[in-house]
Structure formats: structure tokens, C-alpha cells
Amino acid sequence: MGPALCLLSAAGFGAMAIFGKLAYDAGVSPGALLLVRFTLAAVLLGVVLLVRPGLRRAEPDQHQSEAAGRPAMTRGRTLATAIGLGAIGYATQASLFFSSLELMDASLLALILYTYPVLVTVGAVLLGRDRLTPRRGAALVAASGGTLLVLLGAGGVSFHPLGALLAFAAAITYTIYILVADTVVHRLAPVVLSALVMAGAAGSLGGRALFTGGVDLDFRAWGWFWLACIAVVSTVVAMLAFFAGLKQTGPSTAAILSTFEPVVTAALATLILGETLTPVQLAGGALVLSSVAVLQLRATRTRTQLLGVPDRPNPKSHQVPEPAQDGRTEPTAVAR
Image 1 (cartoon, rainbow, N blue to C red):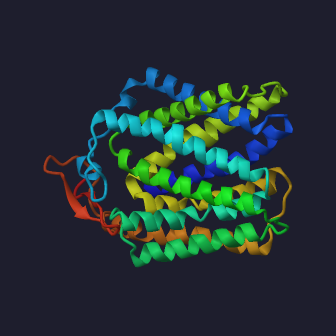
Image 2 (image 1 turned 45 degrees about the vertical axis):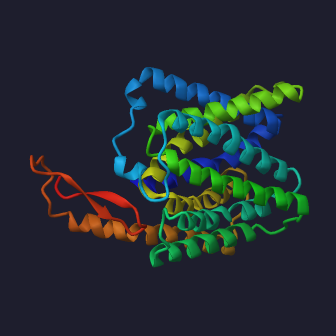
Image 3 (image 1 turned 90 degrees about the vertical axis):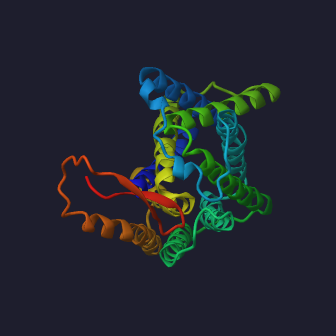
């Protein structure tokens, strides 16, 4: 389920560009979009936690939370880190992204931003959290090359030095965000972690709005519909899926699978906005999909080996730790 959740997250985030374009057509400003997005998402997640208190409890995962490269944390430090992920990490990355978007074409911006899977993989390896196996290396090359083809196939990009600098800063910020999130994702329930991140981002952006004179909420009524789509589909659902997928796959694999996002964006732009996919973009999409297949190869073999196991309770069934290919210890069910 880990890779599937990462792909679901990428699809949700990939749709955000389409929703954002439609919101801009309704007169929504970037500042209003960000503030409403994070505030509404925080409220929705808070309501979910009130209605379903069972979602507040994290599943026991002690061996994961104390894995190599992840520091020990108190409860208070864990909560503060989660809030800081939103207030500092997510809010900064989103602000850099939209500031860059005002200076340069979206396709080149996305190309620069999607250097982050490489940065995350390198960072995770240097921190001792992941191991650069041949399988992961091949997936990284395929995903990065495919993303390059998808975005370069758009053509007609304009280069702006400051915009490029802001875009690369957004990629670095998102890299740090993922690596820091990996230290707390095993200690908090996904809904709780997502709610804290959204609350932190909303608080940070709200405070900035107070100091800068507020944001303009005087836009067309249907703009609120697209903002709701961004908050629900491209924030709440996408973030919950990402944290749940990150917990199961690790930061490198999650980052590589997230390169599916620009492919989704290009496909939706073709279907909804009337843009055309070029043969180069189609080839790039095929490469990204091949990276998914490479990452799924070991999981498929494992499932095949378990096909002969009867699907019924066994009082002697248990879980034993087994070294994973990425260097982390993962539970393997020996009976179902």
C-alpha cells in the first residue's frame, strides 16, 4: 500500500495546479489561495479528529521510530516539530513556489522544483536513513529523466535568474521538509500530523497577512469552490496519503514516486484546459511509470511468495523484523 498511497498523494498534488489556475480565473490572489487553503484544511482535519477520536492514536512502530539516522524525541519535541513543519517548512516552500511562478513559466519552474527527489535521496543516504540500492538508483534515473521529458516537452519556457533561484530554494526547502517529516511520521498518527502541519502553516501565513495588511477575499463566488477543491483534494487527501506512504516506503522511495505529480498535471491540463501532450511528454510519462514498476518489483515478488499461505487467523502468527533493501528494518508477516 505504501507506493499506492504515494501515487495517490502525487495525483492530488498534481491536480492542484489545475484547481489553482481555475481559482486565478475567478480572481483569487496567491496570498488568499495559500491562507484559505491551509486554514480550511486545518479546520477539516480538526473536525475529523473530533468526530473520529480513534484516529488520534498512532500504531505502535517502535523499531521504525528509532531507526538509524532518526533522533530520539520527547512528545513535546515531536509536536513542536510537526507544527514547525507547517509554520516554517510548508509555508516557506509554498511562498517560494508562488513567488517564482510570478517571474517564470510554470513548466521550467516545475522542472527546477522536481530536482528535490534527487536531493531527498542523496540527503537520506548521507544521513544513514536509506541505502542507494541498484533498484532505487534505476528508479531515480527513470523518474528524473521522465519528468525532464514531460516538462521540456511543453516548450516555450522563459528563464528568469531570480525566479530560477526561488524555484531551487523551494526544492531545497521541500527536501528539508520531507527529511524532517521522516523523523516524526512514525511517532504521530497521519491525521494528527497533517492537522498540526496545516495549523502551523495557517498560523504562519495568517500572522504574515496581519503584518502586511491582510489578503483580498473579494473574488467571485465560484472561486471558493476551487479553493475547496485545493483544500480537500490537493491538501487534506494528498497530505494524509503522503504521510501514510512515507511511513511505509521511506523518504527516498516516497520522493521518487512523487515525480508522478507533473505527469498527472500534464494529463489533466490536456483533458480540462485543452492543452496537448507531445510525443516527448508521452515518452516521459512512460519513463515515470516505469520507475513505479521498478520500485514495485520486490513487493510483487514478496506477495507472490505468500500466495500459498492460507488467509485465516493463526494463533502462532507473529511478526519478525527483516532487513529491508533500503537499510531500514521492516516488519514481515510470516503468517496471515
